Length: 304
Image (cartoon, rainbow, N blue to C red; front, side):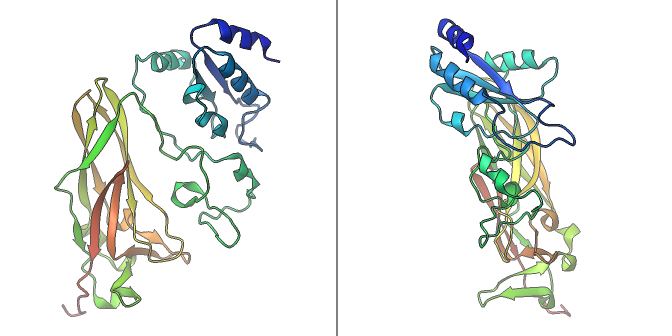
């Protein structure tokens, strides 16, 4: 079926396979019924990659996620590039990335789910997972199933590391009265409702040093998340506080700063719609680096 493509792959030094979708498969008012590549494209990638002298570059054109699990751990595929729908200069941009003239720094704007995710009824738009029914939840905040790629995932020719500035605050007193503290059990743990919290006084700055360990300059997207201690059923796994794009010279360090608002970024919402701030140790997370921030309350008396 792919004789010409296979024969060509045998003769050339390098192979770039470009596959994907177009607006006959996905657009406004036209939803896909599968997450896999349409037609015989997966078979094309497999046959060409087996015929090539060296592992191939695999480029995907699409507006949404595609289940390319078959390619993720295939030693005959050296790299996977999601290009979206790049426009008339897309070829030039891809060439600059593939041949090393430009250091990529993009991040996926959505979770890439496996094909089995389509078994979940589209009418079920609950975000939180339901372990009794096997429902895995939706989005990076709640989804508990297998992923092809995670939200925010992306590769670069540079390796980056992160360190939080020592000036980032580590403890915040919520300064709420005892009547507003809702205890859980007998260990002093609990939460307060955001509506009873002096939110404007709690915000703080968090600075992060980003180190580029390679010689090539790069523009890097820094994603800052928060993780809260679970004080109620259905709390998210983590939440995105924000992101910053920063240019980092090779073998240099750059600094990015976020304004963190605990009432917005550390709070979680109960199933009944109440927004809560958990007392205890929260985490700021960038990549594999975590920084603890404790929310405490002195259980002030009403007349203090």
